[in-house]
Image (cartoon, rainbow, N blue to C red; front, top):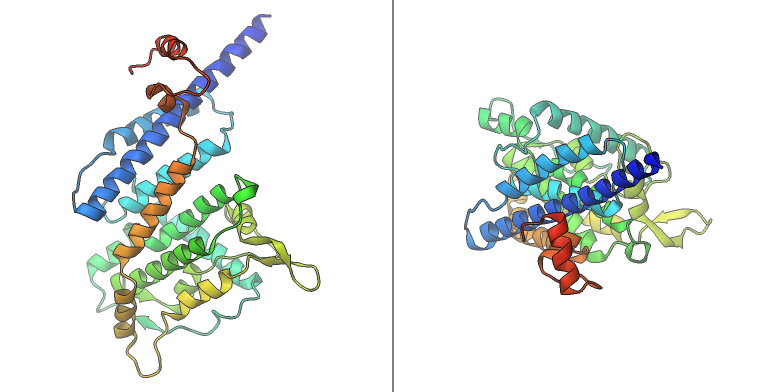
Length: 337
């Protein structure tokens, strides 16, 4: 009996902690998005997310200590991915408490270089075999600032895998809406294009193998285990309704053509200076426009999820609960609102 009571108490504590974690993640993402929209659309640089992020970090530490072996629901995992990606994307140009160390960044880059190599080794797509060009600043021309930025800063190319992993996590949560849309494909393609332009124009590094790594995404027959999201990403790019003539599986329709189209934009026509060409592409596809589209995507991802229970309680709008029941629950949970 005593054992059953202790287990019930532990389960109740886990459920309560999940509600708090869900709430803190939601509020932190909300603050981050509001902060980034203000900066992006109105030029107002206001730190709205510092306290919510501190709450997330503090409570995550408590949660892991209290429940070291418990697995959290997929919806919570998605919120964790969303808050992490939104934080790193919005603060990638400045060093902060959320910036990974140089060692962690290098380990991440090694993982994705290996993943990209495995992808192209197993891919039947020959569109990327031909070199785009070999525009690379000499070591004498590259400044110390560029070198530090290349090694220490979070580049868009570092965030492409996180974006793909986040999208796959969302895609695979609901089979009824799993199929990726043409709109998403263009957003992903533009993300890769912007990452490539940044490597070439800001960091002065764009050998073909680096560009191929940025664009190394799609479905493949055999997957490896070099990356934790390999299976879910492969599932996202698999077309559930289309098969090749021999009955074998195939990649979702349209992705290869869209991805290849953005990659080919990087290649200048004969006789055109590569650097001049890339600046023209940058003019046609401004970073500001891409950031606007990405923020809309992140906001939609936040809004389509069910509001945390504590947020509903805070608004006095919990389906199935009367005002009296909500007031009683707030008192029992010792909530400040």
